[in-house]
Length: 353
Image 1 (cartoon, one colour):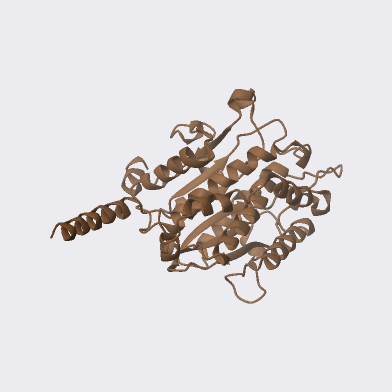
Image 2: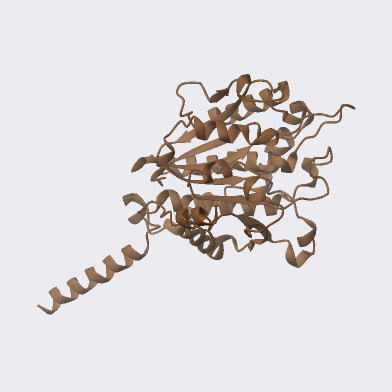
C-alpha cells in the first residue's frame, strides 16, 4: 500500500509539472532529456557569419534596390526561392511555385505586378494551425542619379533573418523536433509603397486567417539607433504590439528572452500615444487588423534610413543574430506549446477604437 501511495503521489506531481510546462512539444521531445540543449542548438545555428553572407548578396547592387515590380525586386524573389529550394523547404502553393502573384491592378500609382514569396514547414501534430514569420523584401530602388538604395537594414536584415530561421526550423524537423504547428515564411512585397503585399495576403490568404495563430514580423533588426549608441545600452531590441491582442504572447516573449537571449527589450514605440505610429507602419498591422496576435521586431531609425548609405557593411551582425534568435525562441514556443495562444485583447482594442 505504501508503495502504491508513493506511485500515485509521484504520478500526481508529474501531471502537475507537465500541465505547468505547456512549452513541451511532441512525444519525441517529451522523452528527450536533451530537449533544452536541442532548442539552444537550433537557435544558435542562426549565426552572424551566415547572416552576413546572405546580406552582402541580398543588399548588393545586383538587386538594384528591390523596388516593387521592377527587375531588381524580381531578382530578389528568385534569389529567395532558390534558397528555400536548396534547403528543401517547399512552397505551400505546390510544386515549384513559391510566388503569390499580385496583379498590377491591385496597386496604385503605376506600380507593376509583383509577388510575395512563400515557404512552408508543415506541423507534425496541428498542421492546420499556422505560425507566420514575416518580413518585407522590397525597398525603394534607385534615385534619378542612379544611386542604389540597397536597404541592408530596411529590410534586408529581416529578410535574411527569415532564411536563417527557416534553416533552423527545417533542421530541427529533420532531427525529429517538431514543429507541432505549421510555419509559414512570408516574404512580402510592396511594403515601402503602402503595405501592399501583406494586405494582399490577408485578403487572399493561402491558409484561413482563423487558423493563423500569430504573425512575428521582422522589419529592421541590424542597426543601433542614437538612443542606444552607448556601449552599455546597445544590447536591445524594440518590440511593438506584443501585448495588444494576446497577453500570453507578450509573456512568452518576455520569458524566452529572460531565459535565453537576455536582450534589453524597449517598449517605447509600443505606447498607445507614440507619435511615430510604428504599430501601423509595417506588415504585421494587416494581421493585427484581423485580431491575429503580432510582435514587431525593430531596431529604430538611424541616419541611413531610406538613404543609399543603408549598406551591409554597417550592420551589427552579432546583435542581429541575437535578435533573430529571440524570434526563433518565441516562434518555437508558440509553435510547440500544448494549447493555441489565447487572444484576450480584442474587446480592449474595440473599446479604444
